[in-house]
Amino acid sequence: MAAAKGQGKYSITVEPLALKNLFATLNALDKEHQAKVRDGAQPISQEFARKLAIGAAFGTTPPQAVLVARSITTPRDRIPRVDIGGSKKVGRVYGGKRKGTRRTSAPAGALLWGSEFGSHPGVDSIGRRFTRRFVKGVNKSGYWIAPTTDKYIGDVAKEYEVMLGKVIQEQKLNGASS
Image (cartoon, rainbow, N blue to C red):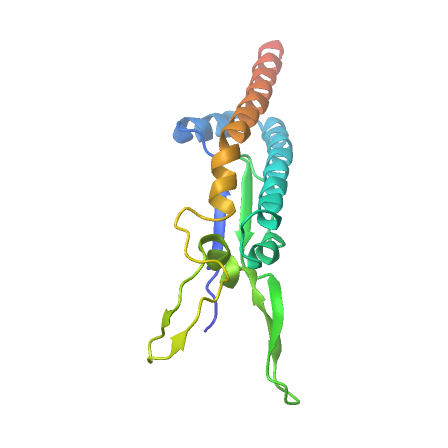
């Protein structure tokens, strides 16, 4: 089955409560200052991504979390943004051993949810029993993405607010002196 675009992706976007007003303000900035906002949001996103990768590598995370953490990207945007998962091949190679049989690796998106929430044994749709596919058992509160987000989201929002305030203030000062 072909994966749909965006399938198996977990995006974390830091957004203030007044999102509508924020985007109205960002849209009111001239192109130069919008670029400054993007340039300022990028390091905030990268630092948060680094904390996520550290959270995946240590602690009680399933081993697949380290593989999924390799897929973390920080697209350049006007708000801090971290994407995890997607189609990047990160798992071990599997497939047939015969000549001409395609061998491939698991995409990060296929491992994402199990690495975050674990798994449990069960029975598939045709009655076959299976064991836990992700060493760790089910944890509804998450192993590495949700706990790291909960721990650092306030700091990320404050840092973004300060950076944005400086850019808006600069815009107002430049606009008043023109």
